[in-house]
Length: 295
Image (cartoon, rainbow, N blue to C red; front, side):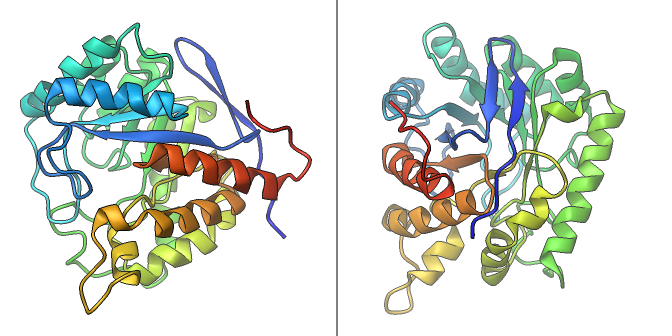
């Protein structure tokens, strides 16, 4: 029996997002040369802008733009380079894209400038560990803040030791992140939590987190889950000892998106928007067989 999903409302500068009535699909736009899934494919502003509109047409409810790769083993990108990647795209989309934009960053300076350029949500994969001042920016600008759990740093997170009890580790880390955010003045109603699938977790722990999402939901915040094309899927789908390449992980992603939704996720963060919009629609009907179809 799938757990019921609580409804929340996130206040953005331009609108209010209702979370929980149906799953929202967040499209990923990596404007980086070294992303694990599409490294360099959308580094040029023109191709990134075109892809943003394509994801909107495919049914994305949100767009998450990032200018720094945080894949396992990645080095830190200077703020100036991060802004160089994302600003032309944000400025070109402002007033033209009809869905809200989230900025995926670990820096308060980048977050502030991105909000001025049209972003309406901050997505911090470090959960305020890299730069706690991000919370001050979110509070001052009154925008939603997504807090993700990351064990360690991107450069070393898959080489360091994993937690003995992954759900306890995630809940402890996210409670700490929430405390920092609320101390800075971020309203509880503006916080979204992300368990950080693939960020400092073993392959088995990623599956365990998906299975135990209802425990995370008990903290009382909306949940975002990002499993799209990640390494644990590549390992699961390996052939002849070689991990499946990212572009061959779509069906595996679909299985984990379904599991995420049935276990309480409000937002799913994906690369393959058209396919996962279909997955989300069907999974939503499993949660509520009597729901009205989305037009």
